Length: 113
Image 1 (cartoon, one colour):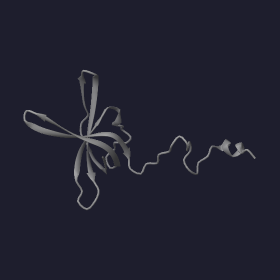
Image 2 (cartoon, rainbow, N blue to C red):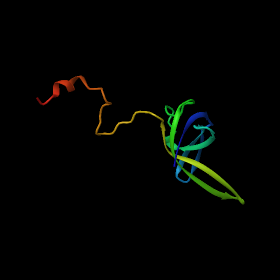
Image 3 (tube, rainbow, N blue to C red):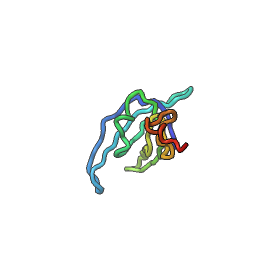
């Protein structure tokens, strides 16, 4: 699933020790777009919590999974991000090593004719 919205708030980073080593979780509050905006708390685990991307005011595009679990007869639901990026940010594939319109100075002299 995918969600887009404006980053409203960064909650405190949580860390701890587990059976697989140290873990880190950053929860963020996102406000969706549209006629009836909703606020959603999204958990971002590990190195996906990039300081450059997670800045209040950024519009983010988040790919996530929803997971529920039971504890003492109550159910708890998490929205866990597996990909976070700034919405509208330019991305380039390996087949396009330079952004459109930008060339290295030496490239003009490398023409085969």
